[in-house]
Amino acid sequence: MLPLLDYLRHLAIQLDNLLIVAKNLRDLTTQMFCEKEVVSYQLEQKKILTDIANISQILEVNYPHQIDKTDQQNLHNKIHKFQKLNQEYVQNLKKSGFNPV
Image 1 (cartoon, rainbow, N blue to C red):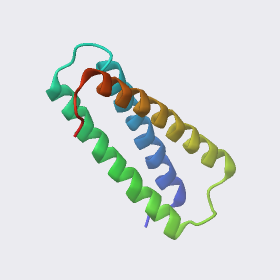
Image 2: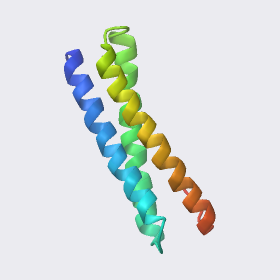
Image 3: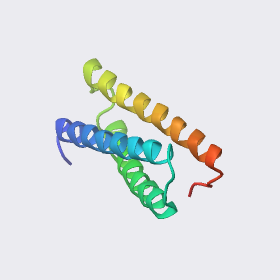
């Protein structure tokens, strides 16, 4: 098992990656887009989300109540940004008539 700090770093990196993909998806769907591009980003996003869920589970089981408030807030802010980007992306897809994976 890795130290808590390593898990937090990995989680922060994956959340940053998730934000990049979510922003790309949102931006892509504001214009004419290729279905293959959207599906590719969706699959990448799914992999990142799976990794984030796995890390979160490890933290919850092995490090309950050990994450300091600053780290918690930073992670929460990234999750909130992702939720907003994802919501915009979904709205764009609905407007376009494309059905996501």
